[in-house]
Length: 483
Image 1 (cartoon, rainbow, N blue to C red):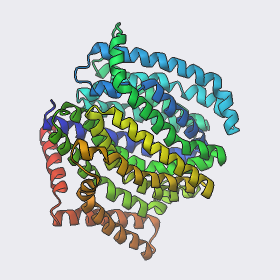
Image 2 (cartoon, rainbow, N blue to C red):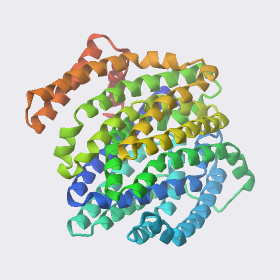
Image 3 (cartoon, rainbow, N blue to C red):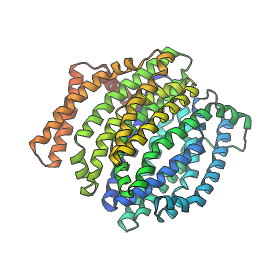
C-alpha cells in the first residue's frame, strides 16, 4: 500500500503538473484568442465534442480498470492496449466516412478536413491512456509534470506561429495535434512500460467485467455533457458555441488544476485501501475538505471579477462569455463533492452503483435540459439548466456513501460549510470594490489581493485545520525535495 508520504508527494507533483500545463495553456489560449476570431474556436469546439464521445468507446473504462485492479501486470496492459488500438481504427474509419453528414448537420463544409485531421488524436490517445494508467498505478506523477511542461510549450509555439501567419483555425488544429504527439513521445522515453507481444482474452474479460459499467457510465456522462455544445452549435452559431465554451473554460481551468489533481491520486490511493472502509472514509473526507477549501473561494472570486478579467485578457469581442463564466463558477463549485464521492465508489469496486447513478442523473438531467431549451431558447438558458443539474447531482452522488462509508451528504456539507461562509464574506467585500470605479487593471489587482488576504487571513485567525494541514504538507514536500 502507498505510504502517506508517497500519496502526498504524488498529489503535489500532480498539482504542479496541472498548474504547469494549464497555466501555459492559458497563456497560449489568450494569445490565440487575440489572433483568431471566435468562429475558429467554435469550429474546433464542435470537433472536440466528436473526439470526446469517440474516446469513451475506445478506452471502454479499461484504463480505470487497470488502475483499480490489485495485481495488473504486463499482460493486462498489453491486452488493453491492442484492444483500444483496434477500436480506435474502427471508430476513426466510421468518423472519416460520415464526416460529410456531420458537416451537413452543422451546415458548415469547413468542418470536413478539420474533423478528419484532428480525430487522428484518437490513435495518440490510446498510448496516452495506457501510459497514464501505468503512471497512476505506480504513483509516478512526477513524470507527468515533466511530460506536460515539455509538450505544451513547443505545441503552443507552433499554434501561435501559425495563427500569426494567417492559418486561422488550422493553428488550433496543429497546436492540439502536436501537443498530444509530443506528450506520448516523451512518455515513451520516460515511462518503462512497453506493449508486449502478448494478448489474453481472458484477462480482457476480467477487466471488462469491471470496466463495462464504467464504459456505459462514461457514454452517458460524455454524451450528456456534450449535448449542450451540440445543441448550441446546431441552433445558433459557432461563435455562440465559442462564447459558451470559453465561459466554461475559465472556471474549469481552476478546478482542473486543484480538484483533478486530488482525484487523480485519490483513485489509486483509495483502491489500495479498499478493504479498510474507515481509512477510505478518512481519506475521502480529507479530499473533500481540502479541495473545497481551495475551489469554493476561487469560484466565488472568479464570478465577482469576471467582466474586467475578460476585457483585459481576451478583449471586447469575447465579452458575451462573461455570463457563462459566472454560471459555470457556480457549476464547478460542486465538483469536490461530485468527484470525491464517485472516486470512493470506484475504489471500492462498486462500478454497478456508479452506473446506476449515471442513469439517474442523465435521466433527470436530460429532462431539465430539454425543458430549459424549450423555455429559454438561448445558450444562457442551457447554461442555467446545466447549473441546476449540478446541484441535484451532488445529492445523488453522495447518497450511496451514507451506506458504504457512513458519510452522509449533510455530513459532507457540514465539513465544507466553513469554506462556503468565508467565501461568501470575501465575495461581498471584493464585489463592493467595483463601486470605487477604478480602471479594470487596478480593480482586479485590488480584488485579488484583498480577496486572498480576507479569505486566508480569516482562515488563519479562526484556526482552520485545513489551512494548517496545507501549510504543513507543502513545507514537508519542500523539505524532502528541496535538497
